[in-house]
Image 1: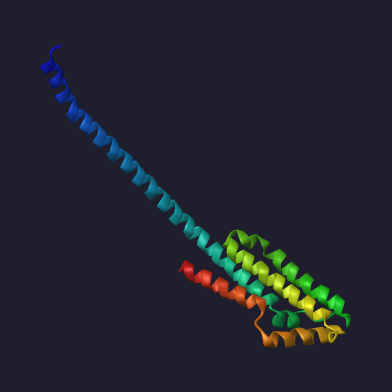
Image 2 (image 1 turned 90 degrees about the vertical axis):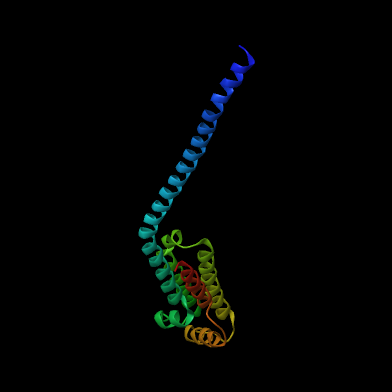
Amino acid sequence: MDATRIVDLFMYMIPSLVVGILAYYFFKEHTKNEDGRRRFLLKKDLEVTALPLRLQAYERMALYLERISPNKLLIRVPPISSNKEDYESLLIQTIEQELEHNLSQQIYISDKCWNIISAAKNATIQLIRKASLLKKSETAEKLREVILTEMMDRRAPSDAALSFIKEELSELF
């Protein structure tokens, strides 16, 4: 083959190569956009069904935090005897049972939020234990008074967690 024929062959191949490369990039971008659109629509559909479940989980955790707030807990759970150790155990058991009823909610809320709720629970239990160790809390009624007096001076641990839940919910909307 002579050189002019080879050059002519390349001249005919160049436009077809350019069209082929353009078609390849066009279809690549098109499939990428379609995949993104499908993912967006799927995520949107999932959010429609998941949002009520998430909101319900936040509601239940807010209710839990309200229920373990020492002021409300002491009113709701009266002492069964005058023994302060029995009352301390009853309060701690009530807090733990409340959490057990809401354990499944952790899959709908963020890990950070769950950790803050757990920290509030632990801080509340610690507050009860510290109050029980004081000498002035000799009976269950005195223990109640000591805890209530302590709560007058500072915020309940559950209040901080409740504030965090409200902040996290405000980010959803």
